[in-house]
Image 1 (cartoon, one colour):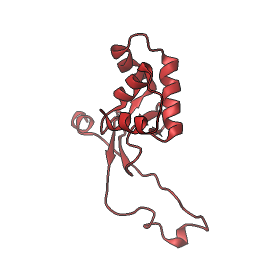
Image 2: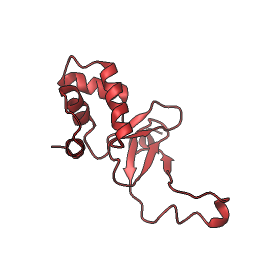
Image 3: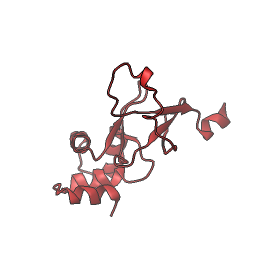
Image 4: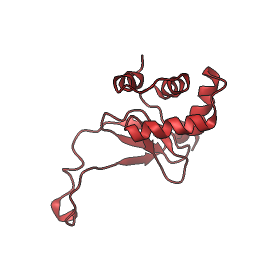
Length: 139
């Protein structure tokens, strides 16, 4: 069973066939699919699943804090099941592929108090941008 499915079962989330398929499609370490990509993959496993059900299920998973909604630039939102391990994202500026990265250090601690302007900083999101190996080779 996937980590996401285990977490959802632990929460007592009602596991319908549609919800299970969406969770299974999202399973993986570097999965950052759009809602349409989730739907396309879910239809292969459960042909009768509707696009609306996929969108509603993704919304529920985000509300539960079990999936992160990732927005990069003006591209479609992507969904990241790696919601419980702090990480940053590495994004290809050309094709939009996303990888989770786990650099050492604490980016919150790296912001000097003189640069906080009185804010109580509680979270940080770091996005690294560049070209993935495939796009770099084609350049």
